[in-house]
Length: 403
Ligand code: ADP
Image 1 (cartoon, rainbow, N blue to C red):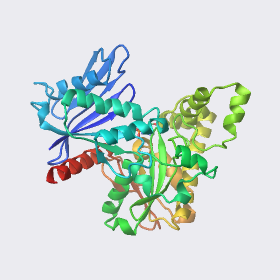
Image 2 (cartoon, rainbow, N blue to C red; image 1 turned 120 degrees about the horizontal axis):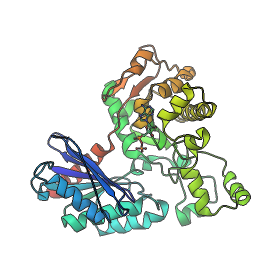
Image 3 (cartoon, helix red, strand yellow; image 1 turned 135 degrees about the vertical axis):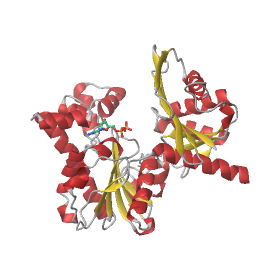
Image 4 (cartoon, rainbow, N blue to C red; image 1 turned 180 degrees about the vertical axis):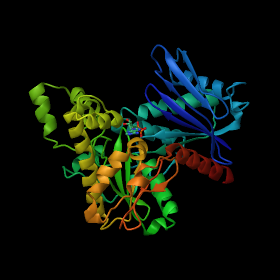
């Protein structure tokens, strides 16, 4: 079965076509600047060089049509007809409390995703455009949705409730949900496989640190706490997001700077984090280069970033009353030797000891970077959220066919 995985954003769309016989990626790509002038389509087939095409792509329906054209093209295509695509899987950021697992799309699921727009106004409407665009181009091909929040639905109330009037939870579902769930789920399972130990016996701290960043305490395969909250703003310091701060800072800043709700939201989500402190970039590579060049603001940004990651690791070791493995994943976690080194070198109280040579190895494979003496295993595991979406979609469609 061939499964198309789609991650639709408001002006972009990423795709991967999987052959589920061997879970190979036949083609991948992205469409950027949807609805703007000079939209870009980048198509990367497995058998030949990638191509980039600039044209006018007014909406997601046209974007999907262009993607299908590329997938079936006589030169850069990888299939002969779109009918070979037997299912489509979508990433959906917010599943609220309604979705504890991935599901096939039907009219009820669509209205529930719509009801959740207010919890994820930047993401869920874009995912819905992706679902509609597939319907417009591919009729009633089965579609599945895989939620970033679903893995964290196992969190106990003591971890997901905010200590604010309970009526706000009852009326508006204000609580912590957590995100990056497909990634935390995938890397925790890969950790158990890599260590050759049952997942049920393990206490794992997964550090998904990329542009967005979150840590999760995974006990016996279940998320028991995670650093992001009602939205992806809570927790760690990120590329452009503030992460944790005293909530009183918000009304105080609004008052002093005469900011609207939208302006303060934009400040915290787009103009904070590494970018605000370094004054130069949200990209960890540039922060690290700046620090090595002796730039004090880059150094402060770097130190704040690693300090927070370390504090959350300490907190989650306490939450689980121990930790067997700490795992690094996503753009920064998989690639930054210096970040892993700084985070781990002051975890001696947990008995963490990493091998500097193993830490330097670059690879796409899961690997251990701790010494044999380390009391906690430390691993680097490349994440693969698209594969989780493809697998869930494949499983759901097969189950539905067997009924
Ligand atoms: P997203 O959250 O957008 O999916 P990624 O997981 O792809 O992000 O991570 C992107 C980030 O990874 C970049 O902003 C960059 O800071 C970081 N990154 C990538 N390669 C390196 C590297 N070699 N060293 C440090 N940081 C890196």
